[in-house]
Length: 294
Image (cartoon, rainbow, N blue to C red):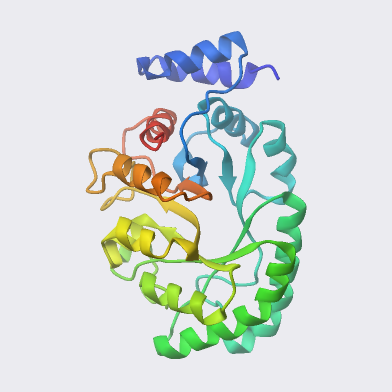
């Protein structure tokens, strides 16, 4: 496929850094994308900042840089992903939200119906994972929330197993007010692991967000290694700023990436950081991709 869209954009961005030289050459020669490393990398939309690339331009650039997927694409974007050799890494469609999630027993019938439809959507899209939100406590004990989440996930699990789709819950943190998630029941990674084990299903898993785990629990690598069988998707972002995963942050993501690959992890590792003030988002995407190439 001709790279007319990204070549113009990439050449303009390349003036900021010689880092882009091999990518520009690949675009000029219309050669295969540069794919490197043992990890399948994906992105959330946050990494694009205030850039004005169309979804197709984003896909073309991601493919050229070596990415493997995109998190949370809309159904009408799936064909564009396929055109550029990218996968739908993670999709939503469970009838849950950060406010009203799995722990609300009064919503369980609705959640089950929606999740079955979401699983079917993932099958059709070739997406391995569907995300569900445990939700806000609003006075509920963590123990009750755990039991309620296990109850609905046990109802969902047989269909997920039949269709070969992972249903995952994303950990957050209740410490950073700016993250606006201060009442989430799943603000400790061990709560999620307990729920997964309580379902007894190999298809109920956790989205391991390194940013949130570092803030809430710490010990990011050991905790992941000890519970790898319960993790199907990983997010990365710099701590403490939630910006790029470079040396300006406290986590050494090159080391973390090496450890994840050595564990034999096969899922996606997705970038969920936000570009720092005054930084070129496209340059940040390329350099952060390179940090995780191990």
